[in-house]
Image (cartoon, rainbow, N blue to C red; front, side):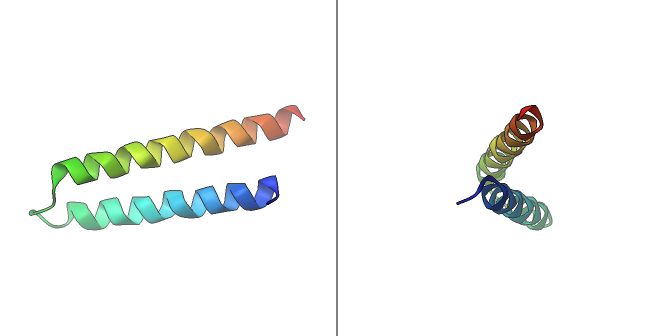
Length: 59
């Protein structure tokens, strides 16, 4: 897998989680722990995306 395809995959997963979080927040019965877990995963993906972009600019 090239770095560009890996980056694209991470961006898709990030966008997916963003949609899932938004959908979950529309429903009052949503488990707040599940939302918090999704937000943590989304943040980790964002950090990895930023790290890869930074590494690419350095090389």
